[in-house]
Image (cartoon, rainbow, N blue to C red; front, side):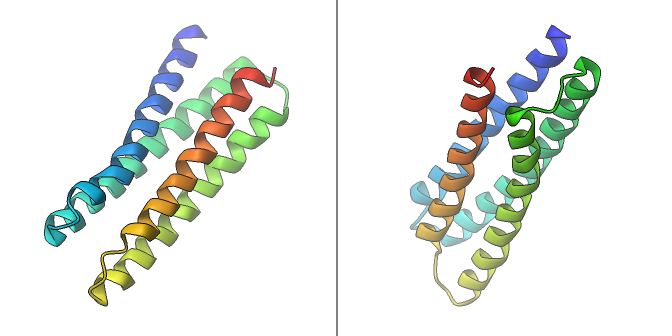
Length: 130
């Protein structure tokens, strides 16, 4: 069980790192629009790949550990649903902004920052909520 929990924890840590990259890369590349759009799209694929791995590993840990439903489990499941909704909204809105030839830097920062804050809040709840 500790191996599964460790695997899940490391995937969540990598996901937090991807959130930080998704938030910082547009600032670094703000003068290079094509590169910024390319790396933002790469960030989408990284997010979805890690999201699916975190979701699958978390559900496996939950099923095998037979934990009762508590606040931290409910918050993880809610975040499992909320993160894709936020990321799809970010993708659609950024595409519209790019078609209007705007960079969408502040919008991207707000949405990814919100995803990062929600993820860290759930991590802290899972650590200290027992």
